[in-house]
Length: 487
Image (cartoon, rainbow, N blue to C red; front, top):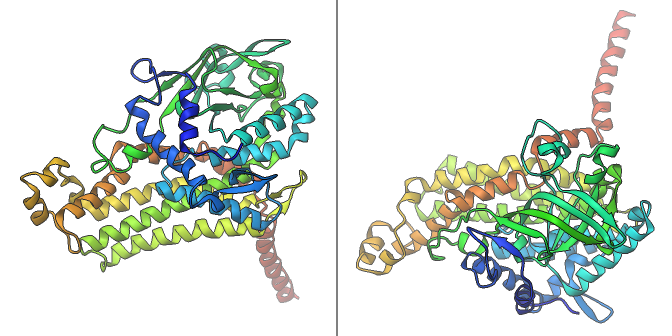
């Protein structure tokens, strides 16, 4: 099967019946207004694969075209092809869509290529991961993933939450598969995906007590016994004029509640190996490929905010002020940080032990640690530039009704008539002030996990020998100078 289009994606959702709860049970995800905007956006992305962007978004293999995110990289040039594809999709939403299929596809591709790593635990697991990824690739399915456990009691480990009953765990197994119960959070977009990848807890102890929590598997989003509890909506129901981002790009986060869900053995990729669970992504190269996609997306997102800042400043004549230019310079520099990290990761990549060309993860990890702390500044800059103008945004009806003349007269900018200035400032509001903007900030801050834990892991894994050697050489020179002086 070739890379699918938007119609095929929507048809796949119509053929499913997940148990979704969003202020009550949702009868049909496709027909529910809460999902109309995001389904339409994802449909557009799939249409891009078979339209004018087909050469950027797909590759040919054995006479069939597949999503570029499944291209096994054999060189730095292949990584560039993958980056161009990720950028093409990211530009559609200005980087606002964080769970497009190419993110997890990048990880899946690496897991399949590193199948022997799973085979070390059980030869069947290697067969399972390879077959599963091949099936996802051939059918161009959309996946989400869930890793974290409910926040019942952060004073104890995930396996001890609510006495161990709230965290997803294995409650039985037989010849047909494993049975799991408990909850996982947060599965972004789960109601509009085909599959959910249930990944290992990232911190498990190597003991009998943690064995029931050590697993990796995949299930259909509508598997029997799985309930998807959605968060409250951020889109307030206004038009695209008033909510230009939220109407199109709200990805609804859900809690996955498993009630004795039976997972067949052919969908289990890891079981009962806490040490392997803890390093599954890093050991297989999946982290590097997923970071390559996510840094591409956040770089595009920074470009969007940089462009927004420039447009706002020109619209109201503040572009010549020193403090305004200083803020824009920071945003432009951040764009270059992302681009430079991507190129460094590609050029310094290498063929790993599993035979595919893996990006150098060091520059990507650096951006991954830095960006969560920088991203909130972009929203602050938009609010500074817009100031009170972000509170003077009339309803769409008043833009075209009897107040239209007053809007054009009193809400005009230096370079824009009133109605165009309102359009621009509505975009600024949705990117920096609205509930949608608040969720974007939260999402980016925790996208890869707790930033403090990420920083600790970064420090512990970084190769700093050369940096320390520079210091030691300076100290050695001073010691030698001191010795000469004493002679």
